[in-house]
Structures are given as C-alpha cells and as structure tokens.
Image 1 (cartoon, rainbow, N blue to C red):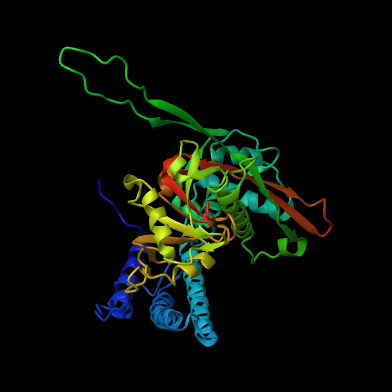
Image 2 (cartoon, one colour):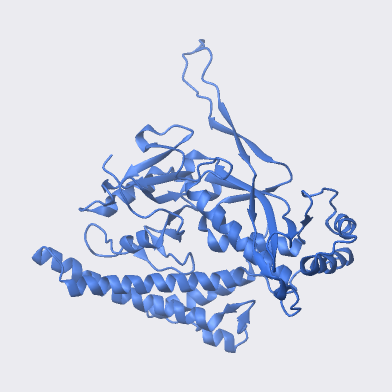
Length: 450
C-alpha cells in the first residue's frame, strides 16, 4: 500500500529540513530558493511560508542563546551554590521568548488546518439546502427546509426540532478540534451513528509451560477479555448574533458560526480529554484510578513519581523522566510522545544529561513544535495541569493506541430569535465522548515523593 503524504505536511517538512540544516551549519536549498524555483508556492492554503521560515530560524537562534545562558546559570550554581539574579532573569526571559515562538508556530498550524472557502463541492441538493439554510439562519424562514434536508443529507431523522448543518460546516467543526487540543490530534478518533461505541479488548493471553515426556500438565491459564464502552454525550454551544448582523449579506454567517461552534466544542473536549470525570462527558487520561507503576493492573494508569512534591527532583531530575519513558512497554514507544503544558516544557528545556554535556530537549519542527525530549516528540496541550503537589503534569504514551475519542455523526442547529430581543441565538448540538481504551499505552508522572 502506498503511503501518500499530505501536501501541506510535505511542505512543512521541506521547510523545516532547510531551516534546521542551515542552523547546524550545513545549509541545503533554502525555503526562499524553493519558493523561487516554484517547488513551494508563496502560500499553500493559508500557510505563510515566509513567516514559518522566519519563526523556525528564530526558534533555533533563541535556543542557542538559551543554552548559553542556562550553562552560565548551572556553572554559577556549581561554583557559588546559587545563580545571580540577572542570569536567572535572562534564562527566564529566553524561556518566555521560546514559549511565544511555540505559540506563534501553533497559530500557523491552526491556519493550515482551516479549509479554504469553497473547498467542498456540493451536490445539487446540498447547494439548494445550503441556500435554504442560509435563509433560515438570517430570517428564520424554514419553509420546505425539512424536505430539502432529507434529500441533501440522506437522513430521515429529526434532530429535536432543529436542522442538521451542512457537511462542509460539520468538517469545519471537526477540523478545529486538533488545533485546540493536542490529545484530539494524537488519539484514535472514530465516528459512529449510534449512542455508544464498544470494543472488546484482550487484557492477557494464555500461558504455556513445559511438561515431561509422556505426561500432561492439565489446563493452563485462559486469555482474559474486557469490554470498553464509550458514550457519546450531548454538548451544546449557543452563540448570539445581533439581528443587524443577520441582515449583512457580506458576512458568511454559516461558516463563521460553524467555526465558532467548533472552537467551543474543541475547548470543552480538550479539557475533558485530560481531566474529565466521565460523568455526562469524556473521561480524561488523568482521571482514572492512578497507581504506582510497580502496582499497575488493567483498568488503572501507572505513574512514576518525580521525587519531590510540586517539582522535579532537585538532584538528577531527568532520571525520573527516563524512568517514566521506560515504564512504557517497548512495543508502545514507537509513536509515543510526551504531553504537557508549556510551563512544564519550560522547566524540561533546562535539563541536561548526567555528565552535563548536552541538553535533553532539542528543537525539531519536523516532528512537533514542542521539539523532542529524550528522542520523543513533545506535544503541548495547555489543558494539562501545571506542576503542583500531587499533580499529574506530564504524560508519556502512545495515545493513538491508548485513548479513543468518539464522535456521533452530525451536528444539529436550532434558531431562537425570541428569547433575547434584538439578538438571535443559534443552538449547536453534537455528541462526543472519550476514554482510555488501552491502559498499558499511557503512563503519568506524579509530582510527589510517593
């Protein structure tokens, strides 16, 4: 089977390779040269190629300055037992600058995920339904809309008195989520047409043993199974639009509302996928029965302690992170990633190996804008908690194999111009959920001593 790369990702990879090569002193064809030769367009979708190149170069220079400043801080601590305030301030300032660059890179990634206007080709029935839906959004006239919906959406369902949004609007809602929640992008995402997604999982296999010639050992242990069930719970977003705006034909009302609803659903889901309790919503990776990894059993998530309450260990802090990485079974490590917020990453950037020779974090825009730590990509998800006493602020896992997000197909819309005078409410509803489906594939760090 052929593996075809997304054209936008291919462009990002080419640019990243050019920039990184230049930064390490081995320049190949520059991003600007590729543009000039026609190998890369000036703009691909909404990607600002020149801006991306500048940000990647800026990230590389900032990291070199950061390393020099942090080396001076570490040397001062070694010689004097403390680091001068101006040195610490410089390290913090450079760390903040790198955090801002990460944010700017993520913003460019968001633009790359947004589909351009008119990207989807509608059937004749869908085009007719779109025109009628736009009339409904602006004026509340729904004459014949139900029949048009059944033709355009191939659906005989009545979504609680509302109307299903167009496929192109629904895709905007789906595509916004990965740019807000890193875990949404990393996890296994499935779309269902029912209220629940179920899967049988084998938690252990059978055992074999040796027997003497001509004898038998009897029955051996049997394989064990568990059923995983994830409910798609209802969520809603209800933006308000001034009636004057509805009269402005220059506004693409349908797509604007869809994008805003998508952001709202993504922010709700992004939070739940990390910390959600699983009650009428998704259950997050930190909200299960977490146990010391030595006591791990199916149904719980194993953790490694940091060695200090509300902080990494004072001495050799990276050793505990190495333990966390190797707590994950080797078959899950290909494709595994670190998951933390930007503040935690800022602390990890300062860590060096035991000999003090090199930094354990390295920028790698070709892999992830969070760079790499101990060879694995770092994914920034600000829904992850800050470092604190007993907090699970760092995760390492193969989230594609470990966590599943379930989307119920279709988003419904109800128009309400009665409740608030001078404004019209648009009630978007969709159903989704999430939960761990392979407890072996995710490990956590608990910022504590036990």
